[in-house]
Image 1 (tube, one colour):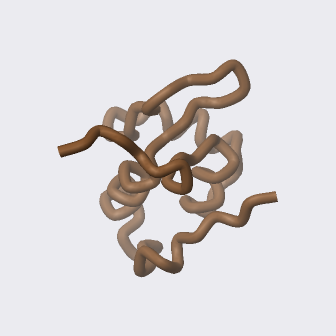
Image 2 (cartoon, helix red, strand yellow):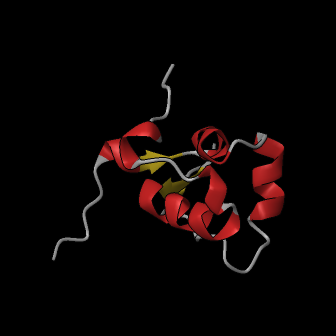
Length: 77
């Protein structure tokens, strides 16, 4: 099994906020929760998460907000 992650499945703080329907500031407090996923990498500008980890967190945290995979698209600038 490969440990590679598709670039389209990498989310920064703004994208995680969009998927979770919260503000970027709320992401900082959510990160303190024991079940919030660890970032796969941390850059100077933002931590980076695997989208599947964030969706898994969402299914536990707010299951009524989970959409089919194709509907968790993140708008890119």
